Amino acid sequence: MQTLSSEATATRSPLEEFFRDYVEGTGGAWETVEPQVYDVLLPSAEAGNELDPAGQGILRVAFDPEALPEHPAAQLASFGTPLVDRLLRAAAQRGRCAQAYLNGLNLAPHDLAGRVRRTLRLPEDLELEVRRVRTLHFAQTVFWFEATFVSDQKEHEILSIAVDLHHGRQVRHLEQLLDFQRLAEVPSRYLAEAHRMSVAAAYPLAREQVVRTLTSLANVRRRELTERVQRQIERMDRYYHDLQTELDEQMRRARKRGSDLAKFAPRRDTLDREHRLRVAELRQKSTLRVQLRLVNLLVIRQPKLLLPSVAVPASRPTAATELDLVWDPLTESLEAVTCPQCGSPTYVFQLDRLSRPACPNCGAATRRAK
Ligand SMILES: [Zn+2]
Image 1: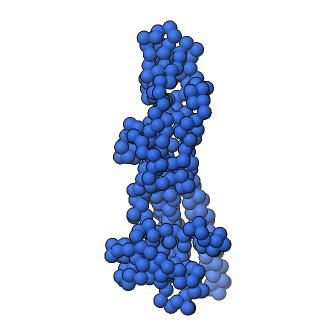
Image 2 (image 1 turned 180 degrees about the vertical axis):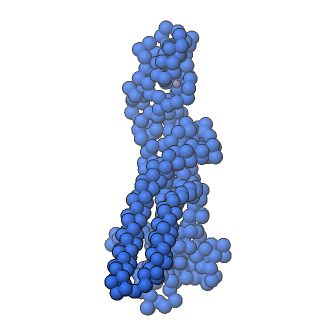
Image 3 (image 1 turned 135 degrees about the vertical axis):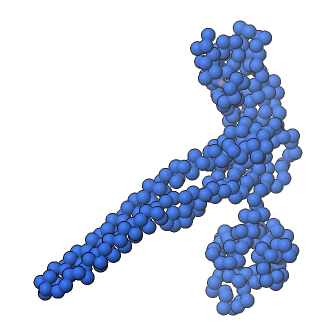
């Protein structure tokens, strides 16, 4: 790839790049016939079914519509064509569940102990001692959900969320985590894995977070929808009002001519009924339904530094508490520490009634209980 001139690469669309990678990645091969036209050998009957339902084995594929007259047997590949729809569907199917390693991080940060101490806010009489530094793989899972909003129109939205499987918390720096320059199929170094929950156990956490986001998205859409439908109803009201006015005018002229007015009453009723029906239809269409489904997930294993530490109150050295601190070399920061009493994340520690380190909530609660 690197040997190609940047000019040749620049003319290829992301779809074309993806197509080449996909064919290679699934065990097939491609050959350039001319720029943007390929002969593709599909790997196996199983994969062939995805892209080549006719079972031809070799496909000629053109990314440039202008090349089609010269290659009448070629299939056009662009968004929305059957070939690309099948390709994307097959790729999503294959990638339902994947795993990767995040490499290339600095695992020997300068003055680690000092940075840890500066990050944590400890009471004066609490001494923190970092006992060891262990480099371990920490697993994080990215969930991709597809939300479908159905009303008078249908819209899809992809929502992604990452959960740290060690702490069981949401990962805020999702973009940094999905740095495809750093993600690889194999680790640069094999490491033991830190204690973690299963992906299945993390799923409810992810879903709970996503439902929260979804609720606000749905509220925005519902507001827009209500306004849109209200405008349509107003238009409809004006339309039927105009028809009624026209009917009144016809009646006025008929009365002048001395004609029979009896035929106007049923027409007026019909208009009324039609008007009510159309408005009811519009209101019905303005109900918003939302569907949510999990489409893909990726487990990312990343080296982090586990720092088994101990917090010792100066006044009661026997009340030493073990704290597992975690340094994340990706964000170059200390992760929030799990409060030994309540399990919530915290950077601030106080001493509770028994001189044990705890988060401000637990510290304050036990002091109140005194
Ligand atoms: Zn607590």
